Length: 512
Image (cartoon, rainbow, N blue to C red; front, side, top):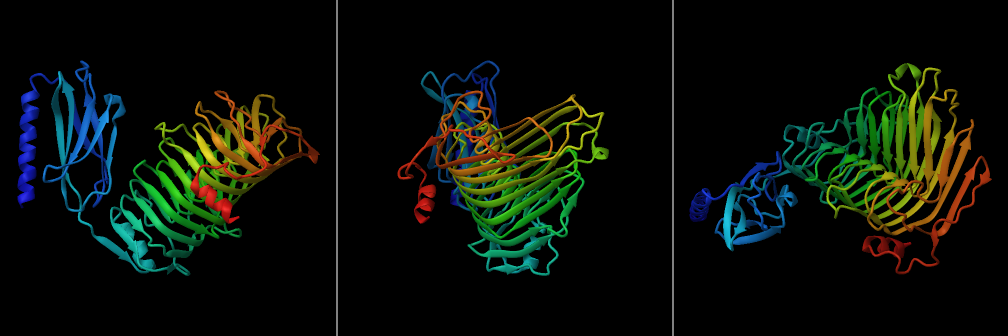
């Protein structure tokens, strides 16, 4: 009670300061709580400034105070453009806090506004069996803790989170196994749709989305992965997860998009400390949906960050387009050992770092099924590491093998084709220096049923902003219809000692 009184007095005090400053103050500050972000230990707020007359000319200070008025943290910003999302972690449950936003004016600190919040009660919901797990759909903001391994054999499984999950799931190192998913949703995965939620310390074993004999068939868009179909915000975290002996068999008639990977279909949040072992994605597309397919993540969006991931995966892709399903004639297909497509980072510090990759990519067929009325552009980018990436990446170890079968006869000159295959990435678009990327070994084998103009290289094919140095240990092999294409574009090294600066990668190499 005393602490509540203290905080109330603080609020009154700072409200008076704000009021006293108001005749001079032309800048306004407001706060918007991010939906689902207020938990027992975290909060996220959008900080919104209105300063049309450029009243704020000096630094902005944002302070976090506890309920006794003690300053816990202070953040300084050079301009209001540097401030948008404000996130606080490791807070105490059921505790009140005060946020102050201030600036300087002629040497005096002027409080612009304040915001108070109280964290939620720390109440973990214990999960013991399959029924408990599926019942999580009743509370998508809950804090869940797994109490033991769960075997889902014989259980009809639908992800409890086909709508946004904003809670926490702590697996405590236990295993969910033998899950079979037989129906397609927009967001497919054990955890279908994660917004501001956290999933940590969990093992997944023998998870299946469809089977070889009975693949999941969808006629609509989908974001599909073993773990999370859609990780939708920068507030979400996926960490310390192991995925073993799991597989996706998906056939799509969609004309919009298909994003698929082992960890996530699309990621906009933090992914770290993940191991993917002996897992597989098969995707057959029968139309001209945008395809973004990766061994880890299909589509890495602007706010996603990925660190310390080990991937052992196989991708099989098949395009057998049906003319009757096409309203337009553009195809965009991005496939990579880590990810098919990576957008520029929202923050300069956001990166993809510490990836140990062993991948096999097989394009079983690439048949556009041309018609005399076809027009448009066909873009196919296939990379041993990325299809296309528009940001920095570093400390990547890659062993990749690519098999590519082109069996589409182009009878129409109005169609433009841009088909490229690279041992690294077809397109790298960043000014940042890329460091410590090693293609330990790679092979590319192209089979052409019909004549086609396909660019193939061990190096990046399109790097418009900067030429980067990439390295190899054993070198690369490129065969086009059995004829070897010789290149010497990667820097050769004779030892891995001291090459990598990421401890995660160094430890894995030492284990080998």
